Length: 439
Image (cartoon, rainbow, N blue to C red; front, side, top):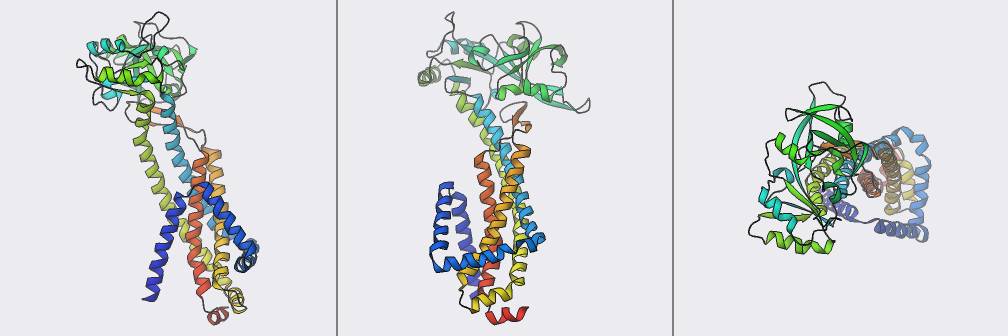
């Protein structure tokens, strides 16, 4: 009963420590490291712990095989975890870059995304008349009524029957004024009234035939690709054509999915939003593009994060058992040495700290190795997935940020902590007489 209560209490303490560790910022970790270093340098128990730890660490070369089990296991956990989280980070970053505080999107009320929105002709006419919209050199409001539909195209590198969904956006002349970051980098822009397309550079990498001069079939019609554009955001994954031609091809009449506007300045947004949402002739929702695209990223980012943490936990359990087995074996091999130290006056705390330091060092090496490999292999790696709120794949680059590397390192040290604490406590609680008879 006593052992059961001790183990239960220990598990509760470990859970609290791990929770606090996960929530701890890097400044807190540095503070803890400084306090721990001062304890080891200026206290008797700390100096004894350092002495015992130095002996154990000096023998790691003799135990290179068993030590590598911990390092490689933890490196694998950190590498996979950081890579999966980098996918979510890159996805969210691409969508965050798409919006800005001085542009707004207007959709039908209660529409979660453009693909679910339908604005009739009267609404499309009224929206650009609202106050707060910037004007061009001709005094016209910078407002772009746009249509979004799904189109299937053959994927690059696949069979002829392998098709993927691409988002086809019908736009007008003001689309470029609303998004000045969009630049044609190859070929030319499409001509109004013609079945011509310009394609984002991300879409051109994913789908077959999206190069200037080629024709593709969309909506039972042949379209000519005349140019490639770059925007540096989610628009790179789209295909653009003239809004009227797209609407005729897909039988959408004069309706549009949304109206994108450029505001005179970000402070105009509240007035613009209030006028449109207060107009009884309209039933629309208004948001800045910054808010809209950020919200579009939330769902998928959470899914990727949950998958990453779940996979990481499964792998971490395996790495923890590997660390436990290795450290229990190390403690057993050094049982007489530890017993001798205990017999000459070393208390249990220095022994616990020494074993923990050894395990944490191996975990630190594994965490650094896993983070480095994840950064070298996956940072900037191009990927694509079906984006929330769209009807096509979103191209993005994985982003291994310092924050993700720090997360991976904290996971590594947490695994090392759990893998070392039980062998360390066993070493400290092992009766001296028993330990001296073990070898």
